[in-house]
Amino acid sequence: MLTELCKEVNNWFDQFRCFGRYTIKDNVITGNYSLQDNQYFRIVGSVFNDGVYKYDENLELVDEVFDGSIWAMAIPKDVIALASDIEAWKDKYQSIDSPAMSPYNSESFGGYSYSKSGGASSSGNVDLSGTWQGAFADRLNHYRKIRP
Image (cartoon, rainbow, N blue to C red; front, side):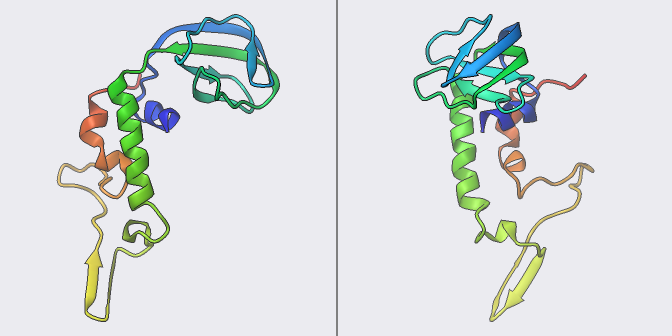
């Protein structure tokens, strides 16, 4: 979820980036980088492992050799909590049985009816209320960086 969240806000919370050739074998990364235990980091340029990970004993990576970079990250605790809240929201509202996942904008049957919001909002922006991006927009905006 952290990879999706950082991509959405265009903020990788990176402290520094190390470039070079890296070998991943049995969940151990060899190459030029410096990380502390339990620090988050991003792998870029890998075929199998691009994304955000936590540098701990539970690291699960696919063996490979690649030329790319490892970004040491300093993700605030609030962002970690936000990622957890988004996961819980997705589990509740984006399951296969959730009305939000229905392909229909409205339904009615047996005395029951519902309508989903959709389309553009009054400001002309796309309405994201049925997505985690819309549900957490206020909290996400605090960390958002403007795209170049």
